[in-house]
Length: 322
Picture (cartoon, rainbow, N blue to C red):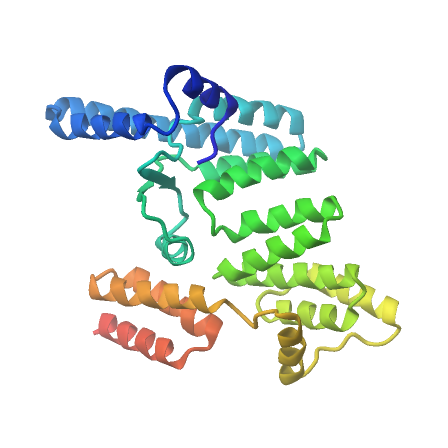
C-alpha cells in the first residue's frame, strides 16, 4: 500500500527491506491475539474499535469544515488525522489491506485485481480519508497534491468509481485529455450504481466536446440521462447545440450503439461487473443472505436488462413473501 514518507524513512533505518519483517510482526500479533486471555483480547479489540470510532468522528468533522469552504482548516485537520493512522495497514509481503463500501465492490475487485496475497479488511475508512483530501486539494487548486491523495484512496479501494471520476476531474483541470479519458473509462468499468454510470457518460460527453466530436458527445450526454436526470447534461447539450447550430437530439439506440462501438465505449455496465454481481447474488442466496442477493440481482437485471436475473429476483421475493 501507499506509505507515508515518515514510515518509509523508519523502514530504511529499523529493518532491511524485502525481508518480510512487517509481515512477520503482524503474524506474531495475530497469534498473540488468538492466544491471549479473553479479557486481554477484548481490550485489544476495544482499542481498535475506539480508534475506528474516533477516526470516523474526526473525519466527519473535517468534511463538515470542508463543506463550509474553509479549505485550509480542513486540510490541516485531514493532515493531522492522516498522521494518526498512516502506515498502520500498509501492504506487506504477505498481506494487502482493503476497505470496500459493500461486498459487491469487494467481489468486483477480486475479479478485476487477483492477488496471491492474503486480503484483509482495514478497520478504518482510508478511502474516504484520502478521497476527501484529494477533493479538498482540488478545490484549493493543488492538482498534484489532489492526485497523490486520490491514488492513496485507490490503493485501499481500486474499484471505487467516485474516486476514479475525481481523478478524471484532476486530469481535466490539468488539460490532460488522455488521463481524463483513461480515468473515466476505468470508472465506467467498475460502475454498478446508476449515478456513477450517468457521471461516467457525462464525463465522456465532456471529453468529446473538448475534442470537438459533437456527435459522440451528444450520444454520451443523452445516454447518461437514461441512468440519472442531470441539469449538467442538459446544459452541455445546449452548449453542443450552440456549437453545431442544430438540435442535439438523442440518436436512435442502434445508431448510439454504432457510435459507441466505433469509439470503444461500452453500452451500460461492464461485463465483469455484471458477472461479479451475478456470482455474488447466487452465493448470497445460497448462504441465506437474501437482502444482499436481492441487491445484486437488482444490479444485474436493472442495469444489464437481464431477464434471468429478474426471474431470480422475482422468485426470491415470492419466496420471502410466503
